[in-house]
Image 1 (cartoon, rainbow, N blue to C red):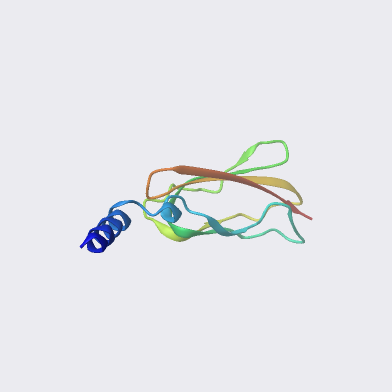
Image 2: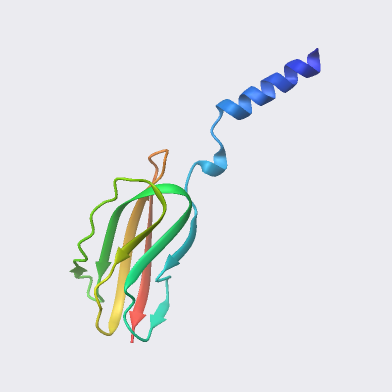
Length: 117
């Protein structure tokens, strides 16, 4: 009987408590990745996570920190991956800053720098 109670408590705890590994999305792939060098301009920004999330912010900057408008609109649906179309960029150094919001509403930001030759 004691073993059954213990198993019942453990099962209930596993069902009711949030899974720690699901708390925040982990980046699986991002392109351009930090430090990438492209012989020609990349046409798409791509990011994939371990769980669904919303891409809430995306900003592209040139080497002087001037924002470059890519027409980004915050996503209203959750997805495993997101793509943002980039206009053809001239040779130079660029920085992308983006923010995603997970299911628990935790915001995660990241910045990547890349070069177009």
